[in-house]
Structure formats: C-alpha cells, structure tokens
Image (cartoon, rainbow, N blue to C red):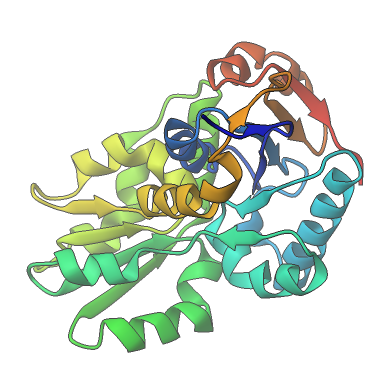
Length: 272
C-alpha cells in the first residue's frame, strides 16, 4: 500500500552554460521521476569573467523570473563560481530550498598521495576568500596549487556544440602545472564545465593523476533532500523536462537534437 502524490516534484538546475548538465545527469540517474527545468544564462556567459555583483543580481533575476511560471521544490546552482559568490544571498531572498556546488577540497585531501593538490577553476573561484578558507581549514598539510582559466570554460561550452578541442591549446593553459618537477597528483575540477573535458585533461596530465569533482556527492545529497517528496507514488500527468536560455540565437535553434539527447522536450526563452 502506498500514498499517492498529485504533484510531480520539480527541480531547477541553473548555470551560465551547459556545465550544469553534468550535475543534472548524475541527479536524474538517481531521481528519474522528477521533473527537471534547466536554465543556462547564455546572455551572461561566462560568469568567471563577470563581477560578483553582476552574478548575484543575475541569479536573483533568473530565479525570480522562473518562479513566475513554476513552483519549485529545489533549486540547484550548478556553477561553482555562482555558488561561491551568490548562494548565501539567494537563500536570504528566496524561501525555496537552494543548494550549490563547491570544489571537492575535502575529497582531494583524502585521495592525494603526494600531498600536492591542484584546483582548476575560474579566476573568481580560485582566488575567492571562501576557497582560501576551505583550503586553510581542511588542507593545511597539503601543497595547494591554483589555476584559473575562463578559456577552459569556453572550450568546454563549444565542445558540446560541436567544436573540436585543441589539445595544444589545452596544454598551453596547463603548462604551469605540467612543467613542475612534482606536479599535483590530484586535480579538482572546480567548474562543472570541466567535466566535459575530463578525457582531454586526463590525456595531458601524468599517468595516475586523479581528476575529481563533486557531481556524485551532490547527486547523493539531492536524493536525500528529495526523499520525503518522492517517497510517494506520483499519480498525475508526467510533465516534460524543459530547457531555458536567456537569449535565443540561431545556434540554439540548431541545437535541438543536442537538447533532446539530454531528455529535454523543448528550449524556451525566459525574459528578465
């Protein structure tokens, strides 16, 4: 005997681009019966080159606009930069439960063998006081290296829309670490976009280098948060997943097969 729910749970995933799809896929694998809304702010992309105030204002505007159309059970800020900069303010502004994504510092400390850890992220992420405090708290016994790059974010974004990834260009970005006598044996992918470059990055780093991220941890955490909501059988109409963007372009219109491949039935614009 089971209880029958008349409301399908709804999760909103937000990022500046397609990086958050890596988080979405992990969560959908654990929670397939939830309705997913995905918003990518292609007009504001990339956040790593924006001011902190811009990101906060942008996040508030996006969530406010979406709440005019949907009742949400959970919001996931699937962007390390936006989470670090804006999450605390978003929780003050909105009543809906909101979680963020952060670099897997504690996991890296557990996994490193040579005590040299690299954090690969946007320039905002790797320089932010929150990250420095996190490293100081959990990784005092480790040598922490920081490398910020907005170019990697753009490369990952372009890859998902069909561009070929230049290994030589990737190598030029990673040179500060690759030329070290003792390079990091554990590298934190501190941007959700970088998960789409994991194979290319793995090729460039020395054999045995561990590339880690927080996507599976986030998915497990979301599953626990949603347990009370999805612990009933949904009896209503199954709503389709929808992807939103902040500006419609010709490229977006030509990308429907890509969008459909991730389980979204349509692409729509949310005006703010």
